[in-house]
Image (cartoon, rainbow, N blue to C red; front, top):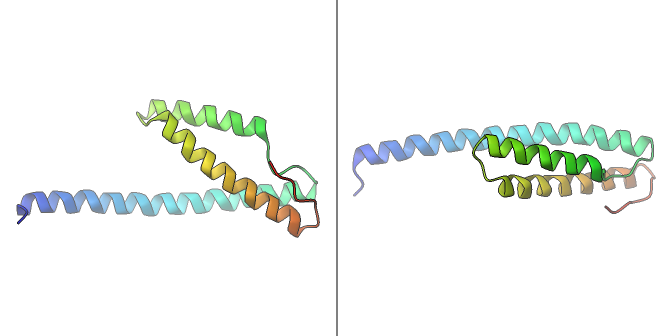
Length: 105
């Protein structure tokens, strides 16, 4: 049997985690709404789905933000790389839908 005070504290932490997870999902949805618009613009003007210079800048920027927030910069980079990979995949699909050549990064 768990002490009721510990159980209440655990429940409180878990509620906070659930709220943060919900906020993350909504933030990611908004981010992908914006990157979809970027993908449409790139497709319209036949720009490549990937932008390595922008990606490098974003990774370095996120690593600094993570460090300032006391979050492991390597974890932050892995997370951003996952997001970037997904964005590029979406941009390739958008380009293909708009008649452009599917360009792999």
